[in-house]
Image 1 (cartoon, one colour):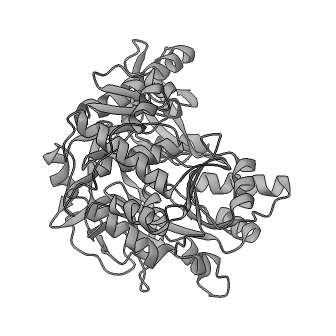
Image 2 (cartoon, one colour; image 1 turned 120 degrees about the horizontal axis):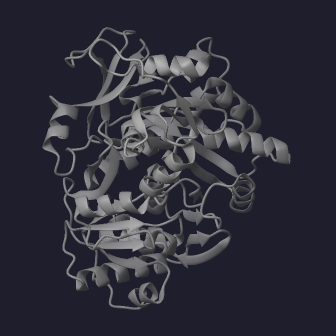
Image 3 (spheres, rainbow, N blue to C red; image 1 turned 135 degrees about the horizontal axis):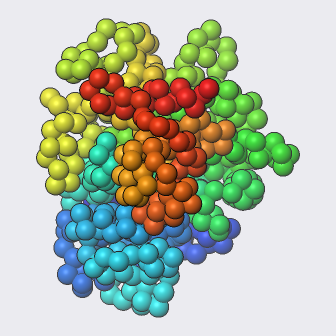
Length: 497
């Protein structure tokens, strides 16, 4: 089933319900939301877009994002969401690899693009003319196995890989949300303070189905005072947040003397949440927090830690449970496997593996990566953890040396390859260092005499700003094992000394 049917049905059932908000200003009810999405679909069809074609979105969080999103689905095409914080070169790679011939982009993002894709700036006269044009007759038929979303996530090589996300996967994720995470009613409000290109965007589905309100902060991002003001204004607010955002929200609310009135549910994921931070958050805001664990390859859908467990302090095991990522969601199986993928005994540390309705069919045009990641029906997450007798899964470490800063993924090799472009860099190795606000920050160990200012300039020219090292450490040589592999554990140890 094409999930654009959920928008069509909400428009039929309650077209006059307020739908899209720019800050506190309503810009569309559900009938208008649906009409504009149909107009986008009609225009795409007129441009030769057929079911299965890819159409990209390179936009900041605005109400137009959701209109374009559903317009693409209405046309039977595949949404290719691109993080608005990415460098233009990175966005161009995604456009080329996905084969997206059309990209809807915010003005600032459009200026960074150099690809051959047709760019539609939103908002613009062109975009407004699209909304006034011929509309799609209805929702294009799609099967559960048809692609809905092509999500690009970097791998150990640093080269982005397109995760193929089907309509059936998204349906599974959305239905599990109602069973394992939270209930949504028409009186609720989805607040998009985290990028719509990621998990926050996926969570629009259940709110569209319920006919709830969708609010994009006027700032376009996450500002503590603005979030608190919007929550108080709308009430019954749901928000997806990275752990660093939760920490900042708690500290900011306390500083401002705000209780968080109107916040109903905050789902956190995307990085390590330290027990002290979530204990502090619950103490200030109350039982509004739910944790989920997922990957692009199993979007938002591996485990869930419900609010009663996050908030419960009566159970003698509450601290251990709070340090976990919860139990398997309803549509998947989760097990801990050894190097060969064989299941390990309860309480044994190994690789977290998952299979079920929410798991991807593979990577876009990358059969080798698919074969490595999907084995015997199981998704090999690359994350290391254990499962206790009650089914609670606890992450022990992240393989692949990925750094999560402010909820965004940074893959060290990608940064290392840029640094090694400088003639004054002989060797480079990048690791994460704990940061009180961002969770982790990027630190580069350098062998060579390249000036830091030149390295900064090189990174800013090649990759997104958030991936740029925040510190450089000079060494005479990088520590290596007998096989010549850099010992990143030794580098992390140096940062602690």
